[in-house]
Length: 376
Image 1 (spheres, one colour):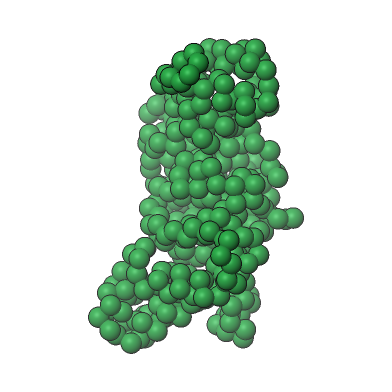
Image 2 (tube, rainbow, N blue to C red):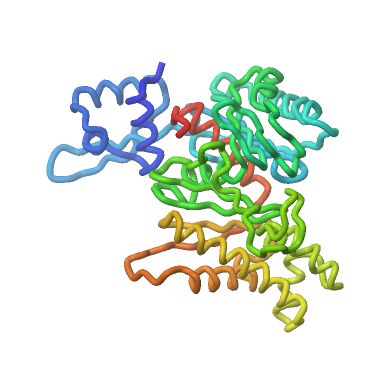
């Protein structure tokens, strides 16, 4: 059984990369003898491996690295259609991936998850015993402790115990998280937010999701609803939103709403084509993208003023990561943040492929099923 100190060693190496025993002693504040015993135990379990030798003024030091094959994770994303399922290793590398369709209702979705997971493990029998669990990313408000989906507008779920349902169907531990939080976790463990203590991940697709990292941990809020910026009002008395309110960010800045506005205006209804039309000077395309980018930029500015993150990542599921929509978003955010010469905000954009959602889901199982991080 792994102790908290074991887990701390694994977390530090995952965060900073290979570390020597001396460096780990300094980080953990434990004795050299205790560190030697911990390292020997983790090496014996196959969780760590010895890497490069570092030469300095004293004795050469051997750096310890995570063994990619010491644990595997299944990630299931319910954020995109079709749904996606992946098998990843401890380095976040995708070893296998599939998509699956589903019938109507939660029971049909659970049955398909169980079928797809069983088929994937059957294809990788040598890894079955080292699967630490299933991470399930759900679009909506989630109680991560109980595994209950409190509310999902996209899936039409309320108070659904999806975690226990999938666990019963698969026989594996299941860890449930909001989809944007899962993306933030994936970026913190394996991507651009690795080592970031204060960061925000914004995912723009059919809807808009947002996950916050505070002191390196997810900030979920009192009821799991932190980061629900899609339903923050940006245009009072604006367009009706599927949540029941009017003028939500989702009605202006989500890719679904942008394409709907373009279709109504007789313009190309793909983001990439709309960006091309805007670049060619078509006023309607420019207006739609400018309005959407402005709305998202104001939301980003509010996040900066409220949480003061060091790094914000805006990820799009479609369209260019440097088009008019993104440029207006960035300009609006910068123009509406109080000037502060000491602030060094990093704002980056990226494209999300379908696998990214499931890799993010797998990171939930990595964080809570292997690194044993507590839910804050």
